[in-house]
View 1 (cartoon, rainbow, N blue to C red):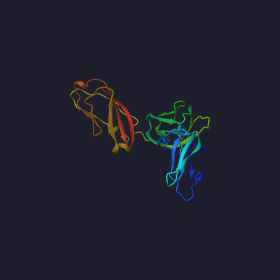
View 2: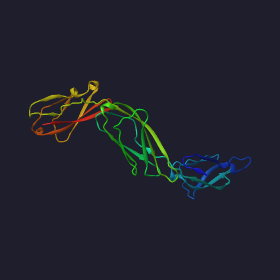
View 3: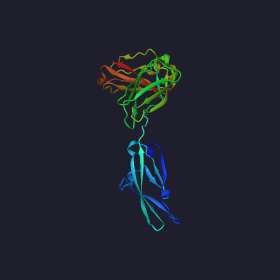
View 4: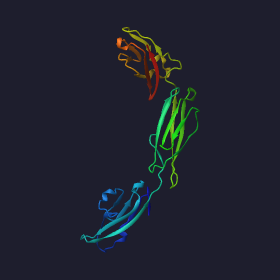
Length: 277
């Protein structure tokens, strides 16, 4: 008798005797099938040490092993052994739960997947702070699909580092199992200043260079800041150079443009929408 996730070993040489001769052992058949390689979790050494290392439900079964024992002259016989490997419930697992760093005043969204080998859904989840806490923290759980949705906007008053213990439990007839994982959520000072001018006018064929993005960034980030952008419509000549929006618009640029400018510093990023007309 053995169990999933518990290594089973057995010395089959205890059942064979040929005084004065060296015996070797090999698996001839498993469950009357000759393709022994299909059972990679079952192995037998030539001196008779049998190992069954079932680590998932699909590797549990009532096994019938036909084991051949041969002497020095390749003479011998086949002995049949029976082993029952019973399944056990495996705890659910967080797939992508990890430490996160993000900025205050920005919406933080994070989707975490939960897997369970036996698909023992629905799952239940609890999240609790280890030490300091903050009020804006919020999450929702799709217990049937195993998806954790974390979404909140921390305030500047909540800047700091927080340990959060996430625990998830499955729903199994073999007995519920729980997995717990502690992660660090670090809320950093906002990248952008609290007041930012986000609307600007430009004129065809005239150089626009009046938006120095660094001037709207908090002083603590100015020396290590980079900008990128995404435009909601075609804005071919728009450009950011040395942290300054710098371009000469042409006829094709005329119109109202909404541009999301992303500030990045030390792994944290924050986007703000600017309007150019």
